[in-house]
Image 1 (cartoon, rainbow, N blue to C red):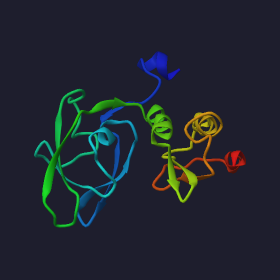
Image 2 (cartoon, one colour):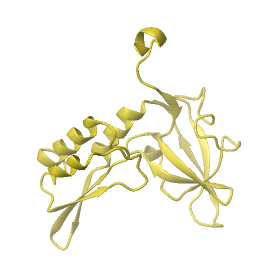
Image 3 (cartoon, one colour):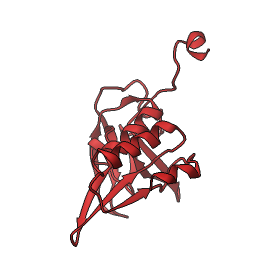
Image 4 (cartoon, helix red, strand yellow):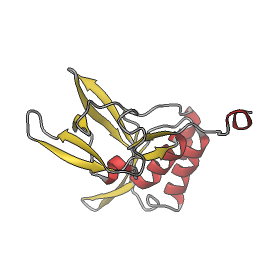
Length: 168
């Protein structure tokens, strides 16, 4: 198989765990994978990426050869506002594992008016492991005592089967 021929079985890339979207020739963070470098450094959806190490941002190229080393990301948090530098430590990312762990790490309970609302971000649902992770969160994990659950599929990569809704 692939592993025998190429020495690996899963794709990996150097990165900080963010998704980006270009708008009006400016690059913005459109998603942050919980638990990875961008999240740990405090990057938020909506942040404009001005540059990385004083060079134009490239989703993978900006971090190639820099895994484990501090990288300076200049961001703008508000339109036409001041820029600021955020230090991130790129890591080797395996997308499937990253998406799965982000479900657990991103899940949280929000308490409002005596109600416990669970929120779980789902960046991809193209693998059965993601469903198992959600079931674990709902049955014995962070969301087991939730009165309601927000199953947040915004800006994700899709792939869910309708039967996955049966858990609800």
